[in-house]
Amino acid sequence: MSSLGPATTDVSAAPVESVRPQVHAKAPATRLADYAELAKPRIAVMALVTVAVGYVLAAGENWSWAGLLHALGGIGLAAIASGALNQYLERQSDARMTRTENRPLPAGRLSGNEVLAVGIISAIVSIAWLVWQVNILTAVITSLTLVLYLAIYTPMKKHSSLATTVGAVPGALPPVLGWVAAGGSLDSGALSLFAILFLWQFPHFLAIAWLCRDDYEAAGMKMLPRAAANRPGLTGLMGVVYALALLVVSAWPRQLGLAGDAYLAAAIVLGTGYLAAAIRFWWSESTSTARGVLYASLVHLPLLLAAMTWDHFRLLN
Image (tube, rainbow, N blue to C red; front, side):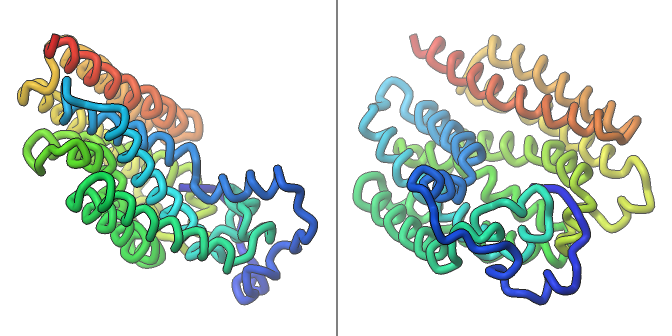
C-alpha cells in the first residue's frame, strides 16, 4: 500500500533489471537487510502478533511455548514467502512508485531469480513445517492465504478496486491460523477474530490509497473506486461505514465469552476513536486527516488485541 511519480514509457517497457542500476558489490550487512526487506517486516510482525493472539485465545490455559513457536515459525515463513513473491510479481509496478522504487528488486540490489527462490523455498518449508509440527488444517488455510494473496489479489489490483476486498480476506486470516494451530475449530470464535481484522483493514487501507493515489495511478493499480475521483468525500464515507461496522462487530468476542466487560469497554473507546478519525477524514479529505486515520488504526488494533487477550486470561483465572 504505497505512493508516487508518473512512469515513463521507457520504464514501463524496460525489464526491471534496467530500471535501476545493478549493484554488484554488496556488503553482507546490506545484503542481509535486503533479504529482510523482502518479508515486509512491519506487516509480517503485525500479522504474527495476531497469530499469537488467535493461538492463546483458542488454547486458553493449555497453551504452550513450543506449540506457539511452531505456529509462529511456520506461518512466519509463509509471511516471508508472500512478501518475497509479491515483490517479485510487482517488481515493474514497484519501480514506478516513489514509496517502493528503492525496494531490493526495482533498485537492482537483488535479482529476480534470487527473490523468486526465496519465496518458493519459504512457501514449501512453511507448509511442510505446519503439516509436520502443527496440523493439517493450519497448513491448508495457510496455503489458501498464499493463493488468495498472490494469485488473486496481487494481479487483480491492476483491474478492479474490488481487489481491496479480496485482499482483506488473506489479511484477516492470521488470527484464524493461530486459532486453528492451537487446535480450535472454525467456529464463531475464529469468525469473530476474522471479522474484526477484515473490517479494521478498510479505513486503514482507504486512507493509504487516498494518500498514494497518484502513485497507484502511475503504477496502473486501481486501488480506489472509479467514482472516488469525481466524488470528493466518497473514500472517507466508505471508511466511516467500515469503522462503524467494526465498532459493532468488536463486541462479538464479549458475546461469545472470549473476553469480558473490560474488553468491551476498551473496544468501545478504541472503536469510537477510530470512527471519529474516519468521520474527520470524510468531513475534510486531506493529507492530515488521512494520516489521522492511519495513526488511529495503528493505535486501535494492538490495543484492542491486548485488551482482548488480557481480559480473556483474567476470566480464566
